[in-house]
Image (cartoon, rainbow over all chains, first blue to last red; front, side):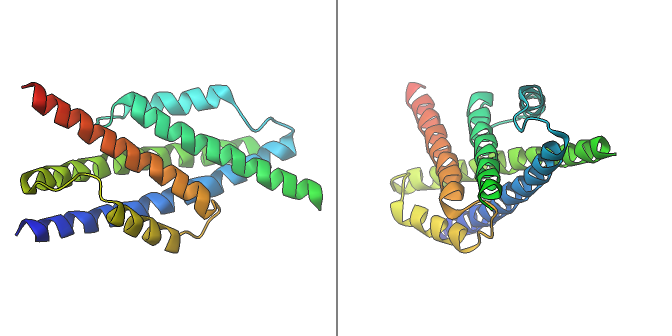
Length: 96
Length: 96
């Protein structure tokens, strides 16, 4: 009985993993669009004020079980990966 | 005009951030449930075969723009945070 319960919970985790995957990539696409607009306007890609604003909103909406520090650590990894992706895009543009 | 576009894209990112936050915490709750079942059955919390299975499913469904390595790096941080959360839960149980 518990094994069936375990399998059901694992199936839920797999479903959430795929939703997370979709959202993380969707987020990266939008960040790329933002990067393109910024490039056209000659604005820097990284905006510490905007990052602070995102962090404040995330923190204000965190109801656990993860504490704020863990959540912010995870999001900072996502932010960093998005910036790195833009660096790669930029370098590609410089090469062509 | 582009500034309005920028604001709209930023609003989309904020919305995705909150969806990610919700899913990351929801995932942690389910992992806690799985951990409780495993404890009752005397099974170890960390299961490398199950982690490999999750990673394979995530990789198979990744359509970018993030490459597999970046996606797996992000998910491994989420996996690790979930295991750490269970350690904290376990220590709390040992203290009472």
